Length: 126
Image (cartoon, rainbow, N blue to C red; front, side, top):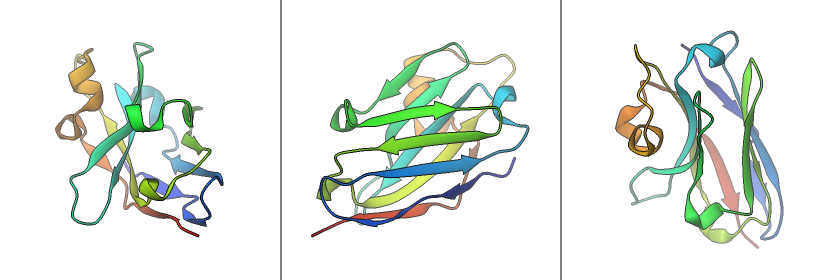
């Protein structure tokens, strides 16, 4: 499974970006998809995830500002009202399993995800 992110860049505080993660033909076979981010010197953290059972989870820090969505080929992350603390490398991830594990832990833990994109840089600064 190859995941290819795009849409990162530099933006001023209050601005918007939309990230995309291309996974042609794979998304509907996955138990879940997610966006994670990692800032320098920090651990990788969940931003948002969407699961096959309809579970959608957001980190508290992005609730009300970010929106995750997907179609049959692409995972998206719409990011509005960006803050300097949103600066990080953003990674797309996918998890599979037979059967799928339906739990908040499986949806939020980086260790539960089998496939990762290469990452895209998001920089929010004045």
